[in-house]
Length: 123
Ligand SMILES: NC(=O)c1ccc[n+]([C@@H]2O[C@H](COP(=O)([O-])OP(=O)(O)OC[C@H]3O[C@@H](n4cnc5c(N)ncnc54)[C@H](OP(=O)(O)O)[C@@H]3O)[C@@H](O)[C@H]2O)c1
Image (tube, rainbow, N blue to C red; front, side, top):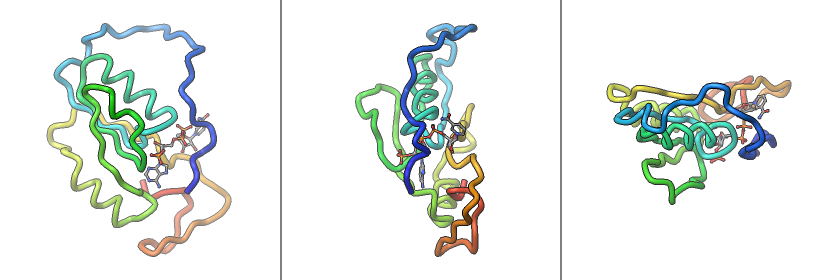
């Protein structure tokens, strides 16, 4: 599946409320769709404030960022989505962000593991 087409990191807006650099130190976060676009920007912002962040996506673009780890998954497959749900360490996560597959499309998508989806992926 192609990306939304929106996905680049913007640097042209100003945060009105800034979190201290270590505000999230010791916390554990997961960002589903954290490999690109808004999810990637959020993952990088969260890790920069001290948390450990697990990103879920297909292509890891930030292997050089300390504190970021990667779980590869193609969430257009319900089987894969279930597997991710089992692998995410839910009991120890303080924060979960889901940025992927949140816009309904006119066209229905049928996958081998689900009868039909209105959304572009199974999350
Ligand atoms: N940006 C906007 O202005 C805007 C406005 C309204 C709604 N939205 C919606 O908000 C969501 C995020 O937008 P965005 O601009 O950040 O999108 P994006 O740059 O295309 O990023 C999408 C993220 O979702 C992951 N992803 C997509 N399909 C996947 C799949 N089958 N399995 C696993 N991961 C998958 C991508 O992973 P990989 O890159 O690793 O494949 C990437 O990390 C999208 O659903 C978009 O439609 C965006």
